[in-house]
Length: 434
Ligand code: COA
Image (cartoon, rainbow, N blue to C red; front, top):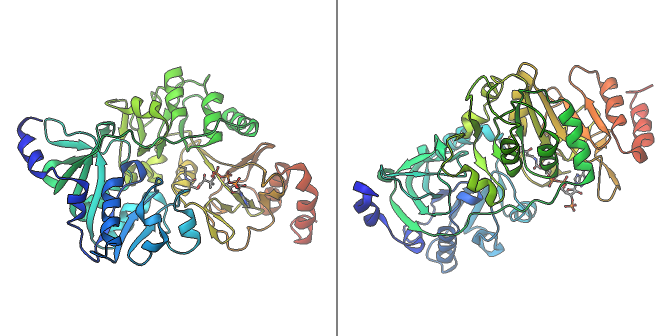
């Protein structure tokens, strides 16, 4: 710890000690789940439950299970503003207890700027180095932006939080108090890709040239793409989320980052989510730059790499090409995340292509995800004028540069066969096809 050891010891307290500093009416924030210090948040919740403080607001992007504000009785006392609903906060969002921030991911820091000061910012960091710096490790995202607005900053030091490179360091002189907790960080369990995921992954891989730069999220299709891309050469990575599948592609030699126009020889990401494998890979690894979201998801930055391929998931698409990826009708499901940032960036990249992947049906083949109109109340995540390729297990509908009639035909071709006749009928009823 060197010359900062005394300062560290002076600031060291407990999660309860940090929670004791919170005052009624404070606006708080934390980074996404693996960066959100559970003990501090729950210690604040304990104080709220005892009636010591109230009217607290917590901003957080995506929450792992186990946070006190999941309890219904916290409503009105310890409120939560979600910047992306996770499985553990979806119900609270659907029954109205949690509020939701409308934003593309690259805008998060800008929107924090607009919303005024953050009284208290709590985050998990990796152990301090000899220069007095803590790394934010696996989650950077909007954290640097929040830091600029935070009046008081508190860190939970966790030896399991990887130390990463890039623009994600916080100096002990900026920190008001420290607590420690050594616990493996959140491990995301992802099911193995399905047969449909493999089909979708292969359709996309067929359109990925050697030397392309990639973004893809988590889930079955991403896992399948990891395998489908393994024989490609000189791929690059510039992605909001760095995952197990990307580690596989690097270790197989398909990713070299040599052909990128910017951040050459480095993968670029803003958060890592996955198993221990990905956290071990990123630890002290200079081949990965963990950078703030306002850089990583800026469409102009994304577009600087030629042949940018982005792959994200959707819930439904209509004949116009409007994609909903964040609600089931008017019921909130997740959030916009960075989907549109990458659709736009890939559109502006020379040779770039964006893909929105979805199974052709939902709920055991009872619902077609290709629809004449989006379900009533559905939020448009990807705009019709920006969308490019929609992929299902039946193929790719390339929509950019196509008329409504051409789009409708292309989409019906990749719908589940059992719905195609009905979709044709609906298209004719609307005079789209005559
Ligand atoms: N109508 C009714 N129900 C639907 C539906 C539709 N059109 N589409 C999906 N569903 C149901 C599914 O059946 C499933 O229900 P179940 O859990 O009971 O089986 C559920 O909704 C989730 O669908 P699924 O396709 O499995 O979602 P997913 O977990 O793969 O997540 C997104 C897909 C689109 C929600 C997710 O990728 C997301 O939030 N994307 C937006 C943000 C983004 O793209 N960020 C950038 C990448 S990190």
